[in-house]
Length: 640
Image: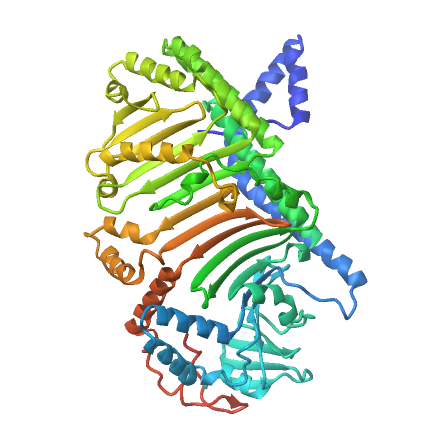
């Protein structure tokens, strides 16, 4: 399906003038222009992508060059060249301790000794390298090619020993003439490692670098990564505040132009779908713009807490204090969820959303529901179902009122432990409407009466049962695949139920209806006002052990994984939790793993070790020492 092509406004104005003219010559000229445009349109479409990419590179180049020229005029010897991306590990010792904790959880402490022995034999006991300080890599942008250049940083206690360790018994270590802090390690004609010793660290660049790659005033890695090291074992950081302004401006211009070009209404696209897609796209554009202009840092980090036997992975966006970005996230939380009593229920998984929409988002959702109502009216006229429009009109009003209130409040919960006996229950809180149950029943009744042979609509069982004197409707829908059948059984039903406050549905076998009734009773109980989780914007909790009963027994890889999982998970150590919460300056998405996941990781790594990770033939490389300026035969490059 082709996108709509919009002519530039100056050309459009000329064509309008020609079209309105009464002169036959003008009319002919307009027709010729229109024909020509139709002929070249495919060419424009083919060139659009390359032209956009070319313009982006030009913008980036101009932004980078302008920034570099500006710095050249002001740069002093004290200026620090900060990287665009930082990949940091807290220390060798912390990683080693985490490995030991994983192997101990997996009941394979012998693997710790094996890894330690490999460190002695293969890495020469990391002699000369400080095992207590952070190490990692910094990525810089090469303006001449717009490709990243990785420069590693390694803490050292003894320079000579550290160089010998890096030489790995095969490299030739050569001092760089005229630069006492610089060395090169030659492994082959095509593989050279360049090093710079500064501030107690070795900065290293591989074969993709050159003689000038280390001609920078690098930041002190320990100071630069202090926050990352204190919070995470391994982390990736994008320090947005350090990115040149020209580069950020160029990227944002390219991203905005590309995104908005994709937000044009497509041929035959319903207005409601277009409105929702456009609102979603504009929301992302606005968010990216705030992150680029007001963001301070983006972090992806992981840590294992050996005392609490927990692990967590964070994705965090931090903005500058009192910025619009910080306020955007701080305003999204704070309202209690209607489904708070369900958050502590035992379940295979629970997903809860209690999100406060900002004013702009509320208006966009109202506009979407208005457009959806109009689309339904157009479709009903074509299919002679005009009666449906009148029936659903009050439902749309309830949806628009809910959007205007601006509290997105919903939950989905899967329960069960035995194959074929799982049940899925989901609910959405709406603006209170006393007639909502009747309106839902009338809508379903109309669809059944006008089924026109549709088997699905004909099988609806209206008022099949009741909860609190309100009707429950049932629709038989059997799971189509083996995965669904292992969860819900070969015969299942969809149950629909509405109260004045919410719309509910449940799916599964006989257990699903009982679970729905139990859920409604639980929600009606008074909430514990001290429960902080009742105000979390988004949370997802799953218990891994419950999934093991529905694993695929026919897949050998699944069976092997299931055996490791069975040995790792108990009912009190198998939870994984994902939460999205605002911070003082931004937002954090945190995933927390209980000790069963740490044990599972340990068993998986153990399997890799036993399958030959450390069993490669060493040859002479483990016994040789690094050589300085020796005329020996050309050595082989290091083996990873």
